[in-house]
Length: 74
Image 1: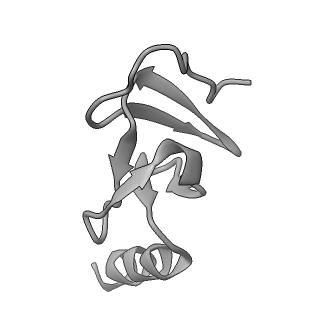
Image 2: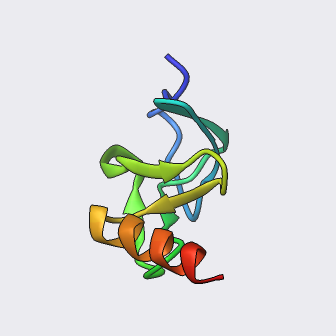
C-alpha cells in the first residue's frame, strides 16, 4: 500500500504527496496537505479527493466542482 507512512515519527508540517490513480504516495512526510481551492489543511487520514492531472488535493466534492468550473472558464 503506497500511502502508508511511519507512525513512529511525529509528522509535522505539510506533506509532499504524489497523487496517483486511486491512491497517493507520500514523498515527504507530514501531517497534512492543503486544499488547492480553499487552502484549508487536510489530514492525510482524511484525504479523499485529488486530481492526478493537476497534482492537487481537495477538501470536499464541492471544492473539486469549483476547480472543474474554473478550468472550464479558462
